[in-house]
Amino acid sequence: MPSIWSGAISFGLVNIPIRVSSASEDHSIHFHQMHLEDGGRVRTRKVCEIDGEVLGQEDIGKGYELTKDETVPVTDEELDQMPLPTAKAIEIVAFVDLESIDPVRLADSYYLSADGAVAAKPYVLLRRALERTSKAAIAKFAWHNRERLGLLSVRGEALVLHSMKWPDEVRSPAELAPDAVDVDEDEIQRALELMDSMTTDDFSGYRDEYRDALEELIEAKVEGKEPAAHTDGGGQKPAEVLDLMSALNASVEKAKKSRGKTDSDDATAHEMKPRKKAAAKKAPAKKAGKKKTSA
Image 1 (cartoon, rainbow, N blue to C red):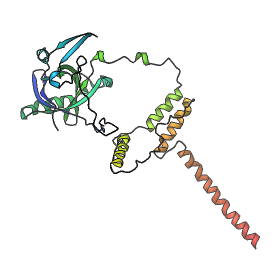
Image 2 (image 1 turned 135 degrees about the vertical axis):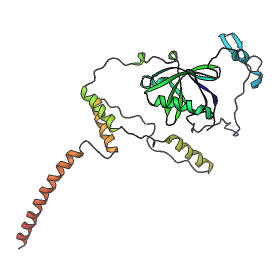
Image 3 (image 1 turned 30 degrees about the horizontal axis):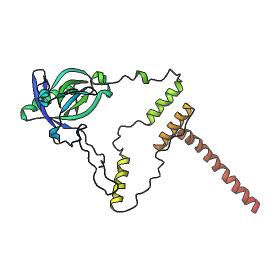
Image 4 (image 1 turned 90 degrees about the vertical axis):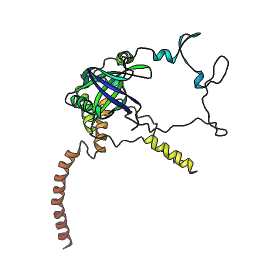
């Protein structure tokens, strides 16, 4: 697994050399822009808006816009001289309960691996200490001339660093809350029943169906075939349901049917047995009557 950054975890006076690797992969299908007339690639060029000159990366620097007409240039050398204590270290600053972390604040995740034999023991020490508690470590680190906030936790045998948003980067959802409404207890219980019927311990079987269809489309065009038409009703708006309780009941029934069970399964089983017995008693009587008539 290729590393994207190397440094150390600073845990009090303990120093743990580590390497950082991305914990996820991008499997999305990416497209290039092309000229529809002749199929040529369309590329993005960086052009100076004053003289119209096409610039290379060596001709481009950084600038902070004070006003629409005034920009302050900032060089890479000036940025490198900025005081950044966490430039080569992931500094643990506190420990918190893992459940207290707002998921909205979490961003990308990275695996941390011990860099060398000397780092193995302090690495395992920190991992085992975190495993024995329900806590996670809050850390500060710096990448690309920017100090960031992170969360250290354990996944399997490895330490994981989750980059986090700073508190002032998270918007408040207060203005999005709907007006006060009354919800019946029966509706809440039915919603809980729907959640129970949809609960699972494994969701690894879900796939990116759009990517699968996109791969089929590309393969068909490469082979000169007509792309298959998908008529699964995608994009249709769901029917409007005015009665919330009816929607909950229908949703619970649908979820149970998808797992081979319905609300009426038990009742149907009890009702069917007596009916079969009654039918079995009437059948011989009819046959006997027919025999007497024929005689």
